[in-house]
Length: 109
Image: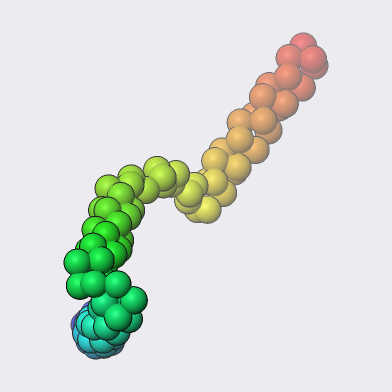
């Protein structure tokens, strides 16, 4: 049991490390893309236009992220336990058998 817990923790730590590295690389890439967008937009127009476009992009992306985070997940319906279903099946079979047996005894009388 302890080995299983340790392996789960190790896998979780590994996933967290890869996710952190991926997030850091995405941030660096976003920084480079922002600078590039600034250079292109400021060469087409002035610096105010570049700031407006880049600012609107980040505000829009932030609002979309907030909306996705505020969305509630659909309710999870619990799956029936197979052991419980099998127990219910045997219970119903036993009840049906006893009712049939009682009906046969009643017919005999």
